[in-house]
Amino acid sequence: MPPSGARLRVLVPVTGAFHGKVRLKRNGLVDTEGVERILSRESAQALALAKQLAAEGAELVVVHVDKGGGEEVLREALAHGADQGVLVEGAEKSESDASTRATTIAEVYKQMGPFDAVIGPARSEFAGFTGTLAALAGQLELPCLVGVSRVAVDGVGLRIAYQSLFGDYDLRVPRPSVLLVGDLEPSHPTAWGIHDAHRVKGILRVKADNYTVQKALTKRQRIENVPQESRSLESVDGATLVRRLRSRSLIAEKGGSP
Image 1 (cartoon, rainbow, N blue to C red):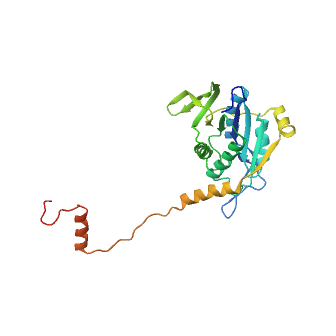
Image 2: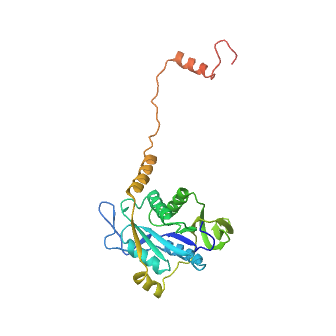
Image 3: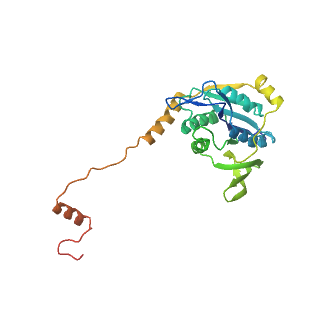
């Protein structure tokens, strides 16, 4: 937690979306060559929520794990009012894996922190951003709130409004927390924001730590490759079977009470 009087800082993970006609190759893979990448609608919603804290003086740092066209996605996020952009490169073959994205974003959080909140989209086109941010919250040992539509500073914590199947609620949560945006009107860039995103604000490029990426992939492979326990049927004669059942008190001893 930052010292009293320090400026609040918010980390906003964003993701891109394909804009245009996407074709399917004969091998079943999606052909995205030449298709433009833009900021996803869910990310624009997350920025709208984060800007509620920006109105209270918070600094917004957006981070994107690159899947091609990452700079354009971040420039668009900066045009929405974010103060700084971080582009994580070098995880192109594994960025769709939620645990890998969570691990790389967690490293950004630790290296560039402290942060008072992580505000991100509820989902994305890549395996569900909910899984990524939930995994991030687990790695950082932070509470994770879903469906947040309003956030404000409340002393040493945050006051949020969130939506659930049972209604709308107000809740006070600690800082830092991971907040997943709910059904909120997306943020929109301004003319000055677009100007600053391309002329004034820079993008910090960082390389994904190969060890971190491999550790996340190894963990996933260990989970996926857990062998199913199976035992072959054992052939035993009747006397042996009765003896084993008696030893486990499953049947009475010979001549004893049942």
